[in-house]
Length: 312
Image 1 (tube, rainbow, N blue to C red):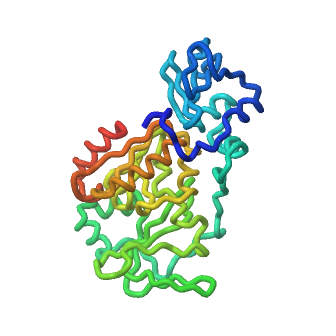
Image 2 (cartoon, rainbow, N blue to C red):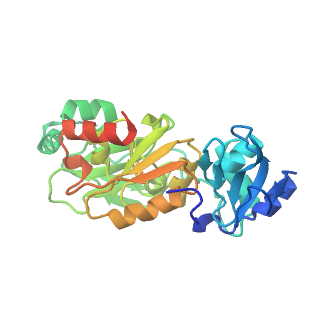
Image 3 (tube, rainbow, N blue to C red):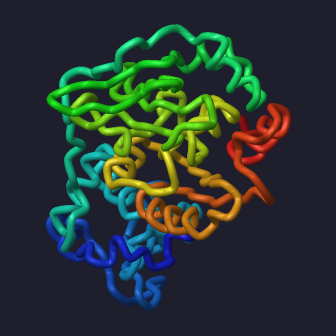
């Protein structure tokens, strides 16, 4: 997705007021300035002069005809002002007719666990084996525990049944901020049960599962088992829906590339997410599986696909 395509998210970003406030000289017409573009005398990336660096008036994406650098409004502001991604988002919000900036709210001080949580046992390990996972590896890498016949989360007058579930912690910035329980019997609904928001630090819907394993590139998948199959560099939204908090985390992560790999048949939802992320991430792609989901791949298939998508 090229940066000069219209991104609805940034059409209300007043690029002229931004450039004027920060005394950045620009030209609206003349040599090397195309229709619907603003030209800057010097490219902030390669330093070439002569209005070869253009900003699209609609999308606010940029392109240098000298070095070929392209990107989003967020990276544009970051580079022009030599600031962080987070500060760039906040600065854009000053010139944005809408809600771009938001706070990531912590809903609690500690994570409250359900009763009778124990180490992974044969019953929970059986489910992992059926999905062709190594139970001991998954237990150790992702800190998985389980419950058995009676497990209740009770806090501030609320109750939730966590019996017969794998307890999967969500770790961000090296601390457990939430968790979910995955039914391992195939008989309980819903399959995934999240901790309620009053009993965790950050609501699961605002979290990015496995984000601490990401460097500068990642694959976004739907579920936690998809992450387990692909390993480091894969993150989960806990479904196909996203929240603005998750987008904010991604925007501030300095990622160079994101590939969205949802389950087969979810191409429309993946494309919708890609359009949103194109506004804050330099390179966004959508990949497709002919059938099934990433968690159903063999380890060898997952390794090959991961190498093709992000090179690792």
